[in-house]
Image (cartoon, rainbow over all chains, first blue to last red):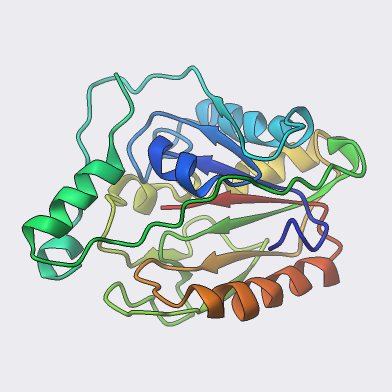
Length: 90
Length: 162
C-alpha cells in the first residue's frame, strides 16, 4: 500500500516462511530469533550491518517479491518462542 | 541452522487448540516502486510492529484484537524512553536495547555520516497482530500512514515486523 503510493519499502524479516507467503516488495531475511531482527543488545556493529543490508536492498532489489538471505548466524540454536500470549488465547 | 517453520508450527498450534485454520495472507506477486534517488540523498523512516510505545504514551494492549493504532515516534526520542507490550515474541533484549528491533540510533548515525540523506522527523509503531480486518488495514490504516510519510517527504520506509 505504501509502495503503491510511491514510497519504496524493505522488510527486515526473522520469519522466512511467513515473509515468503506474504511476499513484500523487498525482504532481507535474518535467521535470528524474533525480537532480535538487528542482533544482540548493544552490539552496534551488528545492528548497523543489518540496517545497512536492508537499506542497500532498497537499491539492489529490482524485482517485486525478492528476498535476500543475510549470511549471519545466531551464536546458538534457538527455538520458536510462542510467547505467553499463545497460552492465553490465539 | 535451518529457518524455523513458523507457518507449520502455528497451524499445528491452532489445530491443537481447536481453532479454525488461520487464513494466512498469501500473495503470488508484489509491486515494486523503484528508488528515485541514491541512498545518500534519501530520507528514511522506520516502522515496528513489536508493541513499542514511548513512555509518555499509553502502552499497547497485547490482547487487543483489530487494533489499528499506529503511533508516530519522534526521531529525537531517547533510546531508553520506550516500553514494549507484546505477548507474542521475546522482547527481553529489545527492552534493554531498543535498537535490537527499532534501530533508531543506528539510523541517526548513518545520517550523520552521510550514508543516508536524513532521518524522517517521525517513525511509526503499530499494526500489532491479531488483526482480522484486512480490508480496514488496506483501505484505511495503510493509506493514512502512506499520507503521513508523503507529508514528511519520506523517500524509503524500513519495516520491521515482530
